[in-house]
Length: 184
Figure 1: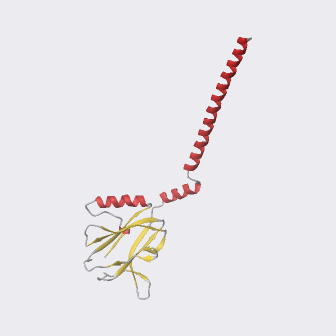
Figure 2: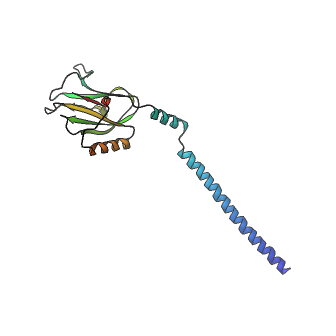
Figure 3: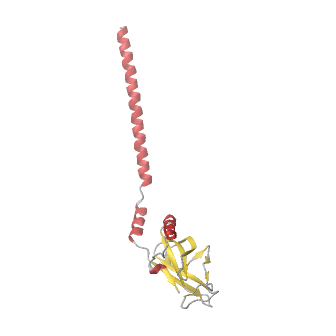
């Protein structure tokens, strides 16, 4: 009977160890399953985000860019003459999607200079580039015989920074689409 008792006791201990081990393994498996479900849910974009991303990828940014000047009555008109020293000009932009832009100038066909690094332009037509509700104005200098202004555009700040770094490394003039540039 004593051996029987020890055998039963040993069988119970062994059974408890198996139950504990299988319970812990089951709980770990359930936790991993739940964690993977949460990660999949968090990392998978919703249908609206997918549609917006697809629309953004499918549609190329349509952009128009021109120099403008205020007339005496305060209306913005397209610049139709070569401005003289001291005149102020601004820039009107139209885009079908939000963009991050930097404006560069090439005075007298020299190396491009960055006039401002990064502003976000919402989609819309005929917007004057501005900072904090102040229209951006460029004052023409007496040395500005020929001027070319170009926009560097991107959909994100990081992409724009990368484009500007590449532009600064190039020795020759950058090649930008003509709709991104305006000149006199």
